Length: 295
Image (tube, rainbow, N blue to C red):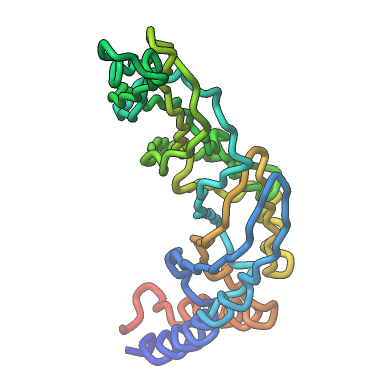
């Protein structure tokens, strides 16, 4: 019974001092997204992202970062350059028309040419006759090409690492031909009466579109250089490049694994804990009964 009180006091003292050392918390995954509006066209840009302020609001510091990754989203629109006309095709018959032509012939005049004679006898006149001639309409065609066939490339750079994504969606469309533009009329043949059959010529064109476009998405884990950068002051530098083509940045998301750093006991706490344990051992030895004595 004499051991209980000193032992309890010693354990109480030890417990008091050792309880100042916190237990390690489990790692926690935190996410933050930044909206972007940058447009890149075969150039690059560098941006800094404040992860430290976000972590501070969650009760962590930048030094608590264990690992992290970034996911970048962008979009490549079709961006057509100058239109390129193709060569005209040959003329094709696209319709028929007709026109009125005429020819003339001489008609002798037999009036007053009787047996008694006349001064006008033997004279005549010219007679005109109209008739229809078949004509044609012919048209030649061409395309006005609008193209963006560059596979736009988005590159993400963090620390000493990089990741790339390419636009891969392809599209092609053909518009309708516009109104026929009159170019002129040519004679395509002369009949026995000296009249032409005409060819009325026209031109038509249409727009065609071909493009490579689409969403751009890429992810990258923090390497040692990125972790050092983020832990130093909570500010992480990120680079973006358009190695080919053009696109717009939409957003970047960071997933950061954090864990509270282990708290190291202070020297004074260690001294108190050691003193309490030493007192426990001393009390135990002092109260140990001798052989043959009453308990």
